Structure formats: C-alpha cells, structure tokens
Length: 198
Image (cartoon, rainbow, N blue to C red):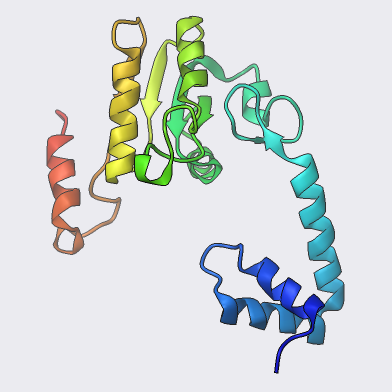
C-alpha cells in the first residue's frame, strides 16, 4: 500500500536531513501525525522562520539574523584576530571554551574538488579581500585534520604568504584526561609533531 501524497511528501521532506533515510523519515512523519500534531505545527513554523530569517554574516559568513552576527558586532572582540573554522557548529564549540576573544571566518565547508567545493564556494575570496584590506593581523587555522581540512589550511597559508599576517594552527593531539593506550597512532603522531617546551 502506498502513502497518500501528503504523507509521502512529509516523509520525503524529512529525508533531506543528514543521516535520515526513508525508514527514519517515515517514523518521524508517523509520530507527528499520530501523536504530536501540535509539535509538527511548531516545527513547521520554526523552520519557516529560520529559513526566512537566518542568513550569513556579511563579514564572517556565520549564521546571522541581521547584517552582522553577534561576534562580529561585538566591539570588545579583537577585530584583527580571525579564527578560520569549517562550520557554525565549530564557532559554538570554541565559544563554549571561553578562551578565544577574536573574530571568526566560517567556510561552510572545506576544499574538496570532487564535491565541487573550490576556494570561491567556501568564501576564500572574501577572506583574501579582508587580508588585502589590512583588517587582519593574525589567522588561526581551526580546520579539521582530514585531507580536506589540511588542504584548506595549506591553501590559506599559501594565500597569505608575503603579507604581514601571522598564521597559526590550533594544537591537536591527546585530549585532556585521555589515556595514551586509547589514542590512535595518527593523533599521537600529531601530538608529537606539535609538542612545545614546558
């Protein structure tokens, strides 16, 4: 038996979410239709408001509801220090640490030619404009340690070569409280390469 067009449309809509296949989407749709129609209406309203009201910050590409995101609009932040991250979720993670007081630049992806993600698609042309304008004196690379993350970091390093901008990379390696026996070899190798004097 097939679903009615409206039910099938709802199921299909849920499959746009990462990690949600047809079965999971069907469970979600059935749950809302059987037990929580008010929750479904609230979800629909929140989705509509977010899709219409959330845009990219003009300066850093993070999520914003106005021209600038709250970080870029905060004059107390170090405007010359920019941490380059892959996604808005990375900004939240760094902000929760309470250690960083500069601005961000959110790539919304990483260099991946296979996926059609080149320098322009991840906003590196905008970052280069900011570097050329002289508004940045330090870039902190906080991209992942995947091949794409490393390629992105290398591209940015090459992009700012010959400018007065200093570039650093966040430390990577053994997590706080971690036992060495449970840390993988690649992470340990990274930790040894990034060691510093005590």
